[in-house]
Length: 280
Image (tube, rainbow, N blue to C red; front, top):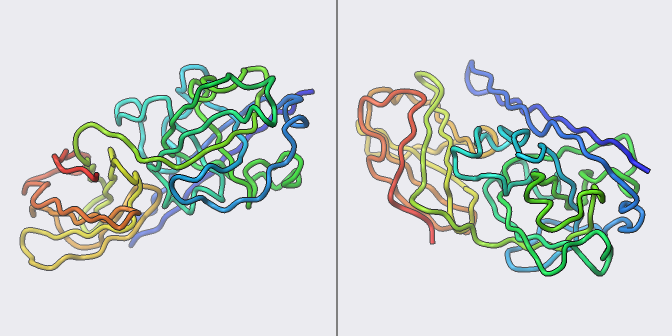
């Protein structure tokens, strides 16, 4: 028996007079008898790094993962940003209102619960790049896979097929959060307009996710806090056009790096600036 599943999310953030919207996770997927075989998972909160937890996983975006581009973390083109096809949308229990964007998870199909749908002896590591919203139509124990408090991964199809048999559609998995491995340093992409700088932070290693961020213009000696606008995007409402910019970034493991004068005076909106500093 097959059950079609579709999910959609629109993120809306308002800063000053600017409204920023992000469309996320237009997904569809076929669910088969594996649903009944797997059974409902035990409720679980978002785990600390290192511990294995139970969840379920579906897939979306097509065999080339083209449908996974964009998403609720704001990374845009995942190919050009270096995230590739090993990515996933997280359910509400894991997504944490965008604070989990950029985190990495090692996932294996749970052969104890559904051996016939698993590829044995393999794992895949994905990066959280999107949100898998709840579906309040079905109850949480019979198909509402993204509903709280269930941990669930809606994975890019190429990543999902590393561990699962295509015809299953949905598989039980075990997962653990792991450090992210990246080449090079953090990258900062600046969008917005005067009095509104929207900064996307990408290529974050180690914890993968950002807890807080500050900016300082070259005309000042004071750090100004930035706010999470949506996903991995942070904003400032100060007038910083024409100034060189420095950023102070703290990751979700409470490690802090200072990127002094990473953005030179004369920068333009839409530019990306790569650093040589990286979290360990």
